[in-house]
Length: 279
Image (tube, rainbow, N blue to C red):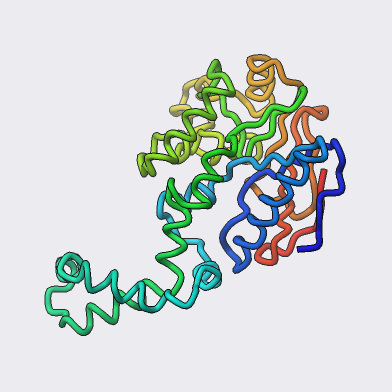
């Protein structure tokens, strides 16, 4: 709590994925919140870019949530809260469980539901809702931040978003978070969207040339090369460089394509054990 903003009028950008795979996300988020206020009062800025894991928490995709994340939200009322919620919804809960396993007893269903909803989980989900403390903060953070000639984005802006202004990308992301959509084509879930795209670092079948038939010339590429794509996207936005995260590179920060792309995710969390670094 004694760590305070010391950057004066500088701008600090955090490129997303604060949450998951560890127990201390809430501490980190609240520290960033404090720094945002302190920096503003000093004439500086702390910009937190939306990551796919923040979006996952808002849309109830909790597959990477560490049990300690739920425990961080517990309070004196947590135990009674989850039991009240169960009692108020036990008919619906029982129907859902028996749709999968008809022979389950009431006691077994109750025990299973309580095990799936440990103390703090309901509070965690409320905090990450659009009206919750963390949900409101997340929706206010940009999917893409432009600072001077530099674009900061968690995954990358793919060519499928060519011609979409940065402000519109941010509005679309905020609206998708507010609706908590699980639609795979929504901007917060789209594998080619700014939160998930990895095409500047790795390529998949969807972004590579289709195989040529025997005896035929290779087919035309289905997608531009990473460097061609980057050139096109920087030209369309008027920026000089893009700074991305999302794909850990434990060897360290990678500066590519003549300084026009910086990959700054070096896996600094304990889960990855990468190099502590900053750009």
